[in-house]
Length: 339
Ligand SMILES: *Cc1c(COP(=O)(O)O)cnc(C)c1O
Image 1: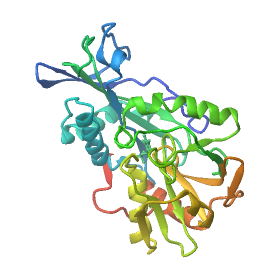
Image 2 (image 1 turned 135 degrees about the horizontal axis):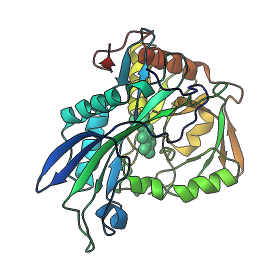
Image 3 (image 1 turned 45 degrees about the vertical axis):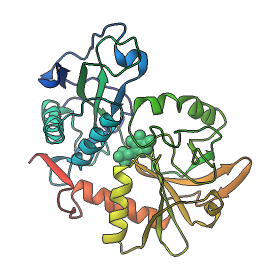
């Protein structure tokens, strides 16, 4: 039976659910514990994650489709990205197929927390891994834990998608050859000061520029950018220090194959921002969130402040339709957890 939760009233915060998946890495291999009840982790005071931040994560959602199936969206790409994050952080990657199986198991164990269709709410899934044994000399840990927990989250936009105002940041998110391309917890730790500062000054997000030349657009702290130009071409920045968003890759496919629009992935210079017609952020949490205004050190670049731009809206409606089962999905995009 579904849990007694007011699905349309919950926000984006942690609510404990019944089960979490755990696997431990020791003596060179992974040992699955499977689903457990305990939400607490006991660690040594010198655990690698606590001293040297050796941790990475993923984020995806399970939700109910129009025909009442419980599904998630392209979990194979989360498996692949986590594999890459682990490799770069000198952590032992978890097998990609087993990753998807573990996602399915975790959602099955919390099936009564998957919000019903039409509420806008979803079950957010958080896979993550961390170095768990004591480390004091700087080196990778020898033991690791891989876990997946879930938490129901509310609709990202309560009362419609209102365009946000962001600023061009003087802080950097990633170093040119650093960790910007992987989903490392440390990227978020160092973005906290910048986002608190932005919020204090009235901006919803930071637009980070490329750290080497500060002339090109990268992304925000947790979402990629897409732009639409005067010819309705959908353009997204190219850089080795951007996190490869699954939502962004899916939206580009939708633009090209469902909406017959031209798409480009290329370097985007700050000077070009004023020439675009639409700007939006994309990521799992909101899918697409329209940007109404970008503040560049006191000067405003303005798009549409009243509502989502026309192309942004089409992209949004199509991807949401694919996810919720009202529009046919490309092969392999929807992983059915419960028929
Ligand atoms: C997770 C994340 C995104 C969004 O990726 P999705 O796969 O679309 O959810 C974008 N930027 C950063 C820095 C991220 O960590």
